[in-house]
Image 1 (tube, rainbow, N blue to C red):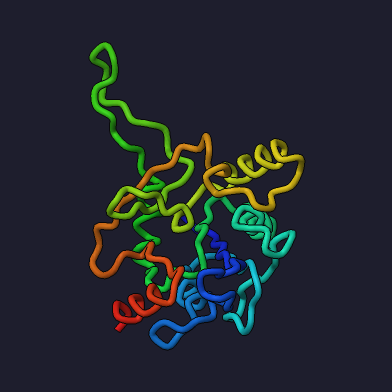
Image 2: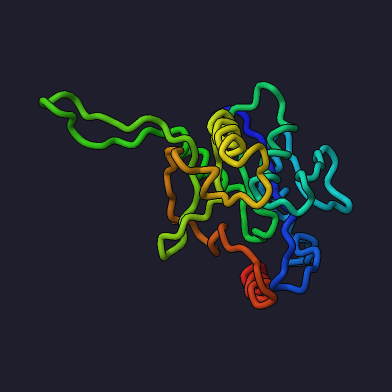
Length: 215
């Protein structure tokens, strides 16, 4: 697969947690955003979008426009800092404390592999779908975890351009599902050892549960 970039979105309002800086909350003794950045330590570059305290060396930091404008605006800000030759990007929420490098590796593998669809019409050899525009995990109930995925940069940029045109130039408040509309997305259930890497922390109870898993 070669190299990939990573954009970590850390600008959420955390309304269900009283507006705290949620990505800075510790799980297993480390801020959640640091755990996410560690899971993509081999990405180049790594971009953090949102308020940032101390971040690991080499991590680029930016803000969405407007600040608090939501995940799509944050994704646009993060992609703007990628190197010109970037082809693949992990787009990740900053509140995924159980994310691992192995989980990212599984997503990269699925993004590279065409999926066989069986014999083509007329008895021709086995066919396969075109490579997906992105892959993301799905939970046990089949819900797509879009901010725990790896995507083709060109597909995301095309989606951002389309969405901006539809919304009069503003991406503030746009939902992620609108960004991904029309993209070929491969959904991947987690089959590895350990807790689900897509587990996000929206409440204090979620943080406590993540702490238990992280022990």
